[in-house]
Length: 241
Image (tube, rainbow, N blue to C red; front, side, top):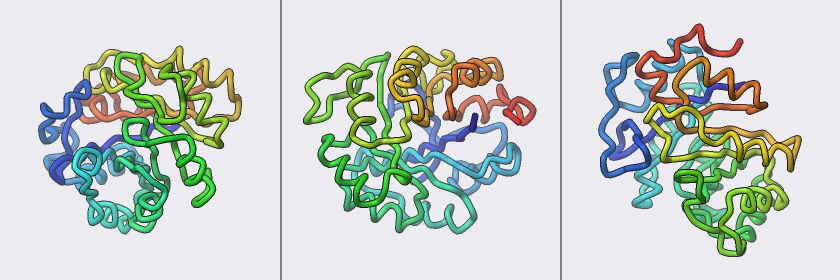
């Protein structure tokens, strides 16, 4: 199982995400880095934990339509593999994101419009470069896709898998940064049962090596982690070999 550190960017600096309450996000105060600059934080993850793949949640782009392209390019140039959620709404913007340095683009339920546009993006850039993020809050879908009648997370997840998605994130924003423990396991298991070959990443609430072990035993392929890395709750020795 991969550990994927998260970098939330707001006003071009790294902030600490807490329960999805973005108006309350403040520049990160980290035990492994004395700066909130994205490159400094990414280097801290790499130098301390050996992690060079990072998930970027670009809140400037998601909320205001202002992607931090320069930051992406800087991180890519420094050797990082970038999984970027910049609030994508169409396939054209996905291609621009790849040109700016993304290894994979994330189509998040929060902003992505429909299955039809998802199918178009999968065709245009290839399913190996797309991750769909099933964005939840307290276990419920943040919104529906425009051409999927149901707002049930399982129904949406199955629909995007049938559309051609091979890699999926299940992210519960209410659990982010609050040390709740993973809350998405039931949904993850149902999606794994539906599509055995699905690559599945989850995020929200991961707080300890015990949580990592629980996710690994459940067959999860990757875990998004931030707060537990910054505050030392997860140490280099806790990471899977």
